[in-house]
Image (cartoon, rainbow, N blue to C red):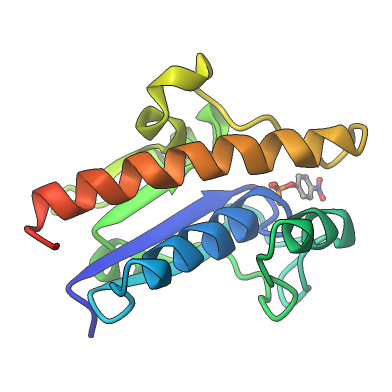
Length: 161
Ligand code: 4NP
């Protein structure tokens, strides 16, 4: 099993978190760290369990070379708090839902993904589901920035080169 395991969480697991999953996994692979860092995503809600990413999210990701169409939505489960070291929420509602189910013995990092993109000026990745298509472009910009910051954090914290 990979030494460091990262879980991205949003509401439906069809827009923001699968985008983060694909972008971060690609970044990890580009640095040759795919055996050291494992990546997954899920949603706090169950409406889209088993569904592929929203086609707008998949199309926007593909424009930048990220293939996420194979991903399937799943709902967060209690076991995730024993499997993952970094559990990163897209917005404050997701974070509150995760905090409510987080066992006291969890010793990893539970927080907002955009804390790794301090220059973005935002704390939350805005939910693009009901908005215009440019919301998906914005999601990708934010996710790419936070992915770089997260990888630097993990490399430092876990002495990965
Ligand atoms: P996500 O976006 O949380 O980024 O996957 C959403 C997907 C579906 C819904 C809301 C947000 N929904 O209400 O079904």
